[in-house]
Length: 525
Image (cartoon, rainbow, N blue to C red):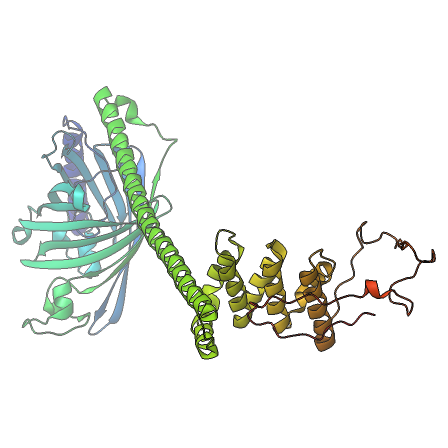
């Protein structure tokens, strides 16, 4: 019975001390500062939540005992912002645990001033000792003073301060330090170190926040030195430990946190002074300025990429133009050499053959230049005929396409004759219709060449020109002529009675034709 009364008096004493502390805190005339959700997990911090904000933390600490094996220590902590300068914590750590934190200084006062907060944690039950599987209640009611300062250019926030348990001399002064680094995309990493049982305990955590930073998934390694070193500071990796090895237990921390707001509970934001609201808008403006700067940086990078692409395209275009001019000069030189070989006396066929071999060796690369020269009426006609002849000797699909273009666009009869000969030598049937049409050309040499080449193509390939509706001129009826001094009876061409004056005579093929081989003459009586 006396033991029960002693326990009750002890509990009431703790609650009384806690109420005095809360009353004192609420009476402090604090300086407001920026509110934020800290990414620390093991040591306290100087960051406070905004009005009516709440953070729910569900976590588990896992370690391996040499006797009990793997041990799981689930925990729960709920943090609530009574005001922008007062936060309370309540949760479960083997028993009910309670904490309170208030801000004294904020970074908004001066750019060089850090955030400063004081608080108490581990009332009734210490979370840290619970994780270490230590039920000694001497570690409860731990006071702390925490500082924090951000280094914005490198996205780093420094935390440091002092933990103290006044009733336990061994834990009366325990400094701590932590580094919080933001990598972007909601990813944080923290390195936290605190002193416990006269031994510094380093820990590392990684966190990822998503869904507008409302949820956080985190994991970490606690007591790294004991995880990789034994009592004699020799390398020994593992999380197996015993109580005899020290107070801290090496283990793995895993947790999930949620950040939200109680919007329907009385908001004391109306008590905020106008200066505080102005500062809040300034923070928002500063954040937007950072976003604009980021967009400008991205835009400048895109402009740089576009300039690089433009310069690359310009180089390629310039190279292409230079290549085109280069081939044009080569073709003109070779064609001039061929013209000289044909005109010199005595004529040497071997030189002509060698000249053709040199120029046709370029194949499709010189086809555009040959096509341009063939259709350029400003170039000497002999050179143009030689260009058409070379296209026929190349004989590739690209070269034959060029010959068909020349046949449909050229106006001079001798250029067309060379084109028809080149198409005939390559047995190109796609131009049969044009040849049939040119068979009725007023120029006798062009008409004769077109008729003869189309006939030979039809004989050798079995192809015929596609039927097409005859033009008005072609469909005119034959009107016989009446000879003066002869009978009035008309005689149709092609009959045995045809007059000798109407006999068709084969036109003379130009002597400077390059690859013309005599065709069988048409005999028309």
